[in-house]
Image 1 (tube, rainbow, N blue to C red):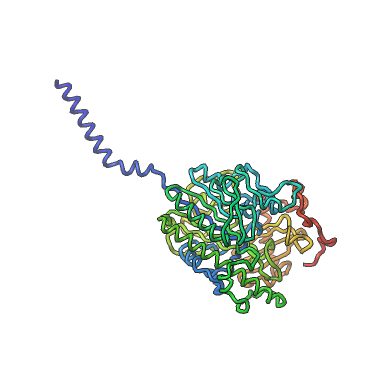
Image 2 (cartoon, helix red, strand yellow):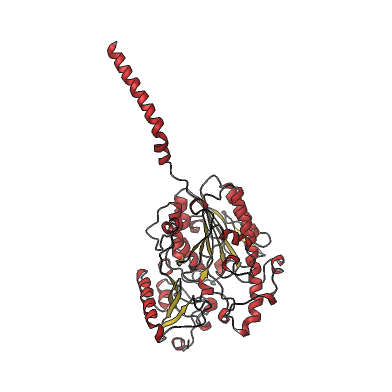
Length: 494
């Protein structure tokens, strides 16, 4: 009996001690082992919205109250740079975190490989719901078909790169008569100006998935041309006569520029309204604290600066884009300026880092999440800008040329196949009116920037070959007349 008693007492004592131990230690052990909830991701990007055209960026003409409010609560990237300032290449680099000569999309309407490792696939593997709404522009067309033939066709399920919720058109800029294909490849219509119903679809997606971690990409078409197709309500907000132009718009183009920019601003304000609706929905769903919201653009638009429209050029109106990242749970709700440049391939790894997810070995961009979380700048000296093949509105016959360059906080340096082409001090010359290239007093600076550029090219194994070499390597055909060159192509005066 005594022995049993001792055992019982011993067992009772152990049980008491065990219970006592567990009561003291359980919060530390169990809570410590519960993984932090992954943030939701809402990635919104407009097409052809240049960095200079926002209220928070110092432009007092364009009406963007919702984006200005978002900027007041976000990281504001002063030097977000498009790796190739044109649609498909930017999208492929954003989705893969790779440089264009790695993933092969350096030309519009070429297909991103089905087996690519992409944003949607990565987040889906990690248990996220994944959705994509709007313009895609990565499915391409069949070889030998009209180059734009794939733009009105559905994207097969196996080529949706990990996105399950699917309200997508390959390409359209007919914003008032816009259709899309759903998950079943059924053709549906966006009613009215497509930005607004696309936003409604995004809000519905958020409400349905608020209890799950989700990734949503919302790809708007505007303010990409046609410049005069915003709803009348927004066009009425802008009188071309009152538009103030950048100092690099030539006198002979100024009337045209004012008209174009008035229409462009109308699109911007319409998109801003939609983004306000989206932000309100996130707040009402109680998701703001643990949701990373990104706003950016693929590339800019010259808008008659230097007398030209649209993109592909290496000037700031073309390569600089707005970028905001709001993540209250980690960054708080106060505006913080990020001055160091960030490039397109850096977006995916930085998002993964902020989400606490691993970064695949296929990714070439840099993860700047740790610097951002520490409240530091990026410690990034320069980013690469490239154009392996000029095409479409900047094809060879329109003055297009292959180039490689870098953008730092302060300088732009670019060379073409003939050698150094552009050098600007963007702090002293923000409109890039004075090309300093090959001037003896700037030779040391030019040499320094050339070393940085060459190191960047070496890192990504870019030999900077003529355009034809890359078209042959990837077995691409030029679209229409893109391959035609002036007979004195390499001798054209700069």
